Length: 87
Image (cartoon, rainbow, N blue to C red; front, side, top):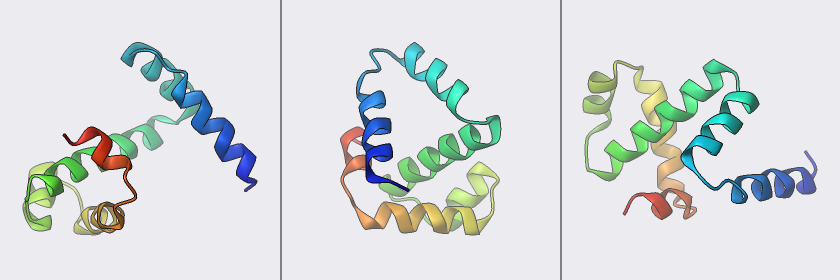
């Protein structure tokens, strides 16, 4: 994938002014399955940040441990994006 494609996408996100605009854009951009996965990943990250165990997250969200583990791996990379919204 060309770097400028990512840059353009990131610039699009920066232009969103409200949660309604974000919703409209994401519902058009992503399939319902993709949107569900992104929303699910955010729920995983919030719970990891709160100190929940992976097994407890699996049980609470009713998802596979593999999904939680993948979310945990991304969370542990600590690239800075999650921390912008985790208070």
